[in-house]
Image (tube, rainbow, N blue to C red; front, side, top):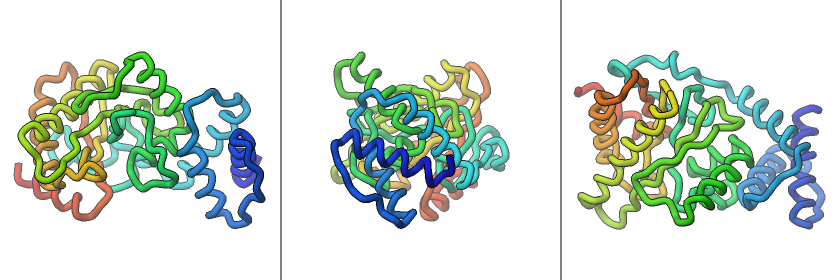
Length: 257
């Protein structure tokens, strides 16, 4: 199947699953957006094997076309710590960190711009199913400051670490700062327990959860530096940023060590 044929097949299956009939958009960009939206709103229920086979081939080809960055080729900002601006769903490393919400099922808002939405979109529907299993076993929402691990499925990484950061209402409190630091420590500890040698962190809590970027970066860098000293094996940490503003903040912090 060509990539166009795969996309149309996936759209038809998802629309049929919802009991909807519609003419597919002729425009490729519109088809891509519709496919992402349908995957975003899909509940974590079993999916046909033939759908998974086509979805996996489609997503892996999409990632190949975007281009994959090997974390080991990113220059070190300091020993064991790297800084990279780019799309975390294209980063090859042992684990990437997802800034999740307390339901831990991904973002259900169609085509939302958050990292949670992007990671679930390009990992595939299996990621939401895996998270649903974890949450069913837990029986309650995920508290802030902890971490869960799942396979990364169609992403270039091996694992996804899901952590819930604090939601800041006005300015961060001491408790907010402690919870944010706990997110970084929990992810590193869980990654180490699974033998990960490289972990990429997004800017936890700084998006929809409104933690001020500069202070969040200070906590991230300080916590990672301290935590790496107690890990049982060497682990590279990549601070992944998406905006120029965040890149400058981390550059200043890492240069001023």
